[in-house]
Image 1 (cartoon, protein in one colour):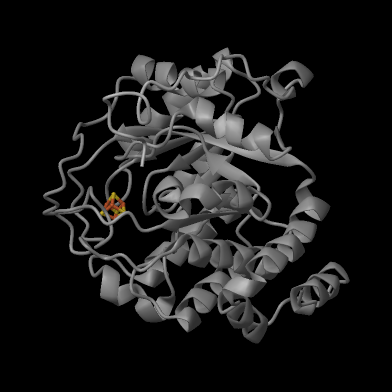
Image 2 (image 1 turned 180 degrees about the horizontal axis):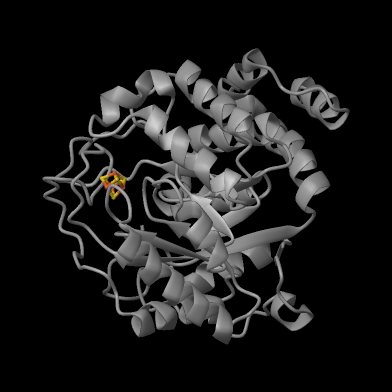
Length: 355
Ligand code: SF4
C-alpha cells in the first residue's frame, strides 16, 4: 500500500496546504491507490467533522423558464428537458416542503429559484417565507440560492434570517465561457463576495464532468479555496436530454471519489457536500464518498429525483456516521426488521433467474 497520500494527509494536518501539484496527483491516483487515497482523505474529514454528516434539503421555489443559457442546466433558456416548470411556490407550500425535509432529518433547507437573479420583490417574497419557516422551526438553518445578487439584496436576506447563500462558480474561470455566455465568471464571484460581505455564510461549489481538464478542476478548487467558501457542493453532471451537454458522460465512480478527495485535501476544514449526480455517478461507491465528504442532499434534487430519503439515512448509518444535529434516538443504528425476501425465481421455478 502506498503511503504517498498518508504523507500528504500528515502534511495537511500539520498545517501545510496542499499544492496544485498535490491536487493533480490526487486526481490521477491509480485504481490500486484508490482505497488508500480515501483512507488518507478520511483522516482530514474525521479531524474536522468527526462522524457527522450534514443533511441538506432542497426546495425548488421556482422551476425552469430561466432566461440564462448555462449548458449543463435543465432549466436553461431553450431547454427541451422534460422537467417540472412552475413559477413561485406559495409560501405555505414552500414551508410545507421544507418541513418535510426537516422531518426527514435535514438540518439545512436550501431555498432555490431559477433565474438570473431576484428582483427586490422576489427578495421580499423569500424573506417572508424564511421568517415564517424560522418561526415554526427556530433551529433550522436556511440557505438561499436565488442567482446573481444586486447591491443591498444580500443584506436584506441576512436581516430576514437567511444564514447562508449559495452561488456556485461551477467551473474554472478558464472554462466558464465554454459553458455559459449570458453571464460572466466575475458576475458569479461578485455574488459570492456580496453574500460573504453581508454576513451570509458563503456556499459555492462546482460541477464536474463539463468537459473540463484535470488542470481546470484544480483551478476551480483553488478558486473556491481563495473565495473561502464555507460549504463546497461538488456536483457531478447529470446530462439531461434536451440540453447542450446531452450525452456527455465523462465520469466514473472512481473519478468522482478522486474529485471529492482532491476537494478534501485542498479545503480540509470546509464542508464538502456530495451534491447532484451522487446516485447516478458514484453508484455503489456512495458510502465510500461519505468517508471523504461530510455533507449530502437528502432525497430529491431541483429537477431530478434522488434515491429514497430513507436510503440516504441508511447509507449514513451503515457507514457509522450520524446526522449532524440529530438526537441520540435518531442516530441509533437501524436494525434489520424485515424477513429475508423468499426466492420465487430461478432454479426450481419457471421464472427467469436473477442474473
Ligand atoms: S444554472 Fe441557474 S442561471 Fe443557469 S440556466 Fe440554470 S437556473 Fe438559470
